[in-house]
Amino acid sequence: MIRLPTLAALALMLPLAATAQDRVVATRNAPEAIGPYSQAIRVGNTLYLAGQIALDPRTNQMIADRSIEAETRQVLDNLRAVVEAAGFTMADIVSTTVFMADLNEFARMNAVYATYFPTSPPARATVQAARLPRDVKVEIAAIAAR
Image 1 (tube, one colour):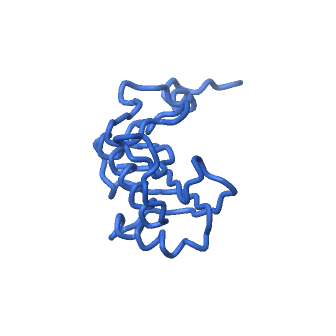
Image 2: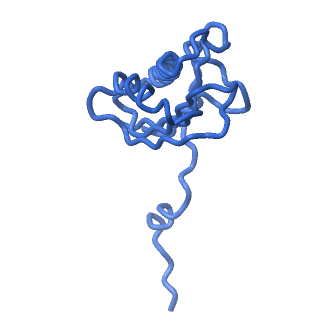
Image 3: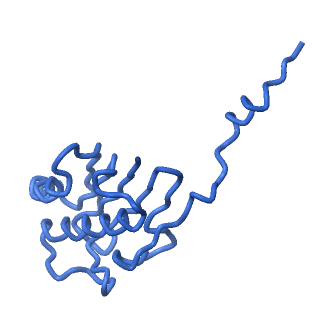
């Protein structure tokens, strides 16, 4: 005899459907997307943030100072703007992925990065990429959760 699962058990096996809580996050305080993607997507209590580069949100152009320190600050300021637009804080970021053009600049990037996460920093992966958009030195994507 084959037993059919209960309705509750069956519901747990189905993929989660989109809810009214799921939404695109967009803010003018961060650069506009330069392609077919969103600045962030909120799904329940989780926020998936697109990678940010060192664009000035007022002009959508690269910042003038192209040092790794200045780019890292701008990238993290852009991420913070999107995080805050969604009602989260930098302390809610649980994971980041850092893409760098040159890992020889890691220590300098890391010194700036550490100032944005002074306690309980998120999990992180850092990789060197052959080339990044607009030939930037650093791009950072993140996930926040509460």
